Length: 334
Image 1 (cartoon, rainbow, N blue to C red):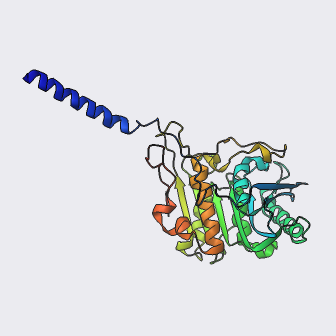
Image 2 (cartoon, rainbow, N blue to C red; image 1 turned 180 degrees about the vertical axis):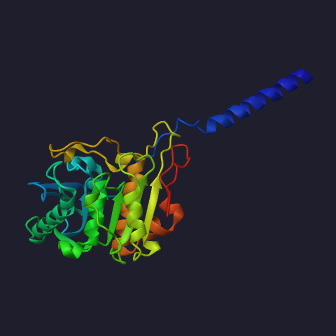
């Protein structure tokens, strides 16, 4: 009998252990989260449709994206600056669609005619495209007028350099002064002539948010560290430089490479220019780039979202959870 009782106890221990092991999927099996239904980065959109307008006629050309269904009488503006050679809007199409369906007009300057356009020409070209777009929008011909006092500028890769330059020299370039700028994996690489000598002149009122990719082999963090260090007028409570990390826990790994901010949508394909390497729209988009850019926009315009963008470490560094509840590796930074 003692032997039977002992065997039964051992069997119970085995069953309990097996059940405990089955409650948490082993590493490598959990799935990435989808887009949240609400909050920053979420799918609670105000508009069902995006109207696309192509005014790409060279290096001062641009594309316009307008919210519709319903069409507003006016809307705030986001300028989106592409990376070096990435002037085809499809590279960022999913993010552009997200911004527009939230109620923004998106201006997408081309700023490069081709690879021979000099880096020193990028910023004035982008400014010319922005001025042209705002003039057209202001005329009322397209039905949606721009709220020019609500400007936020987003830039990826060399587009982040252009973005910082536009904020630095908005008056000289005759564009509205931006309220916030978002620099995604930004840098000059070997083309250093396109950056300003100093970013000390960035306005105290500007909100500044930057994302560095841990495994970025295209540009390093030198440019963003320069902007962060030199922009001393901006209070620390209104600027942040964050590092995004890879995470191989789940079935579909999180990567941290240069083109994480790209998210191809073929509906935005201009049929001109290369498409970036990343075709994924995933948790890095929803919980890192889109979520933090949304928070920055809300902070810049409405003084809301500032804890998520800047001051609440738990909110700022969160990048979602795997399907088993384990957190995706958080951002770090200052």
